[in-house]
Image (cartoon, rainbow, N blue to C red):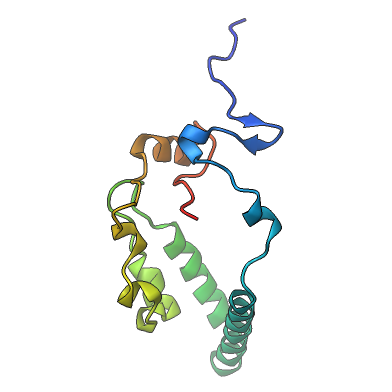
Length: 141
């Protein structure tokens, strides 16, 4: 039998490849997110649930299920990892987030920063195809 020709990048269940994935921080695992961020996420979730109930009462119970199927289809449609990120325009149109005015609209898109490290296309495709482990893009936090 032939031995495996790959080196495992995980030690004790953790990804320890600092050259591919960057240095790991412990603080982000211990400290939770900002209190305003958690309240914003919970308010957004309750708002989506209310909208779903209103749509079910107005158009019937099948309509929110159809919207869920559309959302699942549109979340799968992405560009391959590379220099041009996927805009997810169809999903933004479905969810109504095209009308949102986020921080990247007035502060700048973080991907256009001078310190942005572009994603390694080869590694991204290896992860997508299941040939390699790890995140498709390194964390920037």
